[in-house]
Image: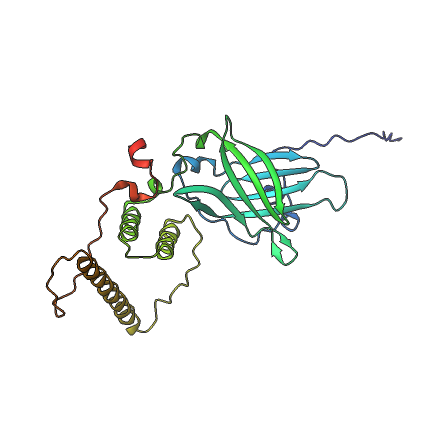
Length: 282
């Protein structure tokens, strides 16, 4: 029996989701190994429908695959025996500025010298959902532009409306406290960071306390908070006294009066983080 072998160029057919960490048919040892677990899906609810989907983009000799709320990978389209395939980031958290989701951070990618690769995904308005551009502004830190009609509405990436009511109230109180000068700008930003972490938008770095700690720990926390509240209230009283004195307004000074906590309420919805949110949208 004679077997004829014909030399020629082999056609390579690539189907979506057949690479690396997203390929269920590769042997486990051959797959890309992620360093971290993706964070839970979070942010605007209308973007949650992107979870479970993947989008490809080819630039030069590289194919990029972005799976929202999961990962982003890079694969070299080459016949070289050591063609590169790697993870550029695992979904971790949002980037937030001025009451707006400004980007998705995919971190904990493959090692790159002494650090891990990471990618910031910028969402822009487009007629269809697709990857539009990939760049590497600094070594091992990538920038990816993802177009989608889901962010074309001018308020589609606002943060405040996505918060549950209790966290919205915390933000209202922080805004009012800043407006009245009760907290510094840094203190205000720290409060917002805590709110965003509680909402799951940012990855929390808080140290978890062992529930089996000694019983006096809660008493200590309460005493510390009470002391902090006392100092804040005394500072507010001194500020008000100085203001009254400045305007020659008489007042009765009673050093033994009971100091009640300051009631913080929002009287102007414009203090909620975005000047146009409530007048334009609601």
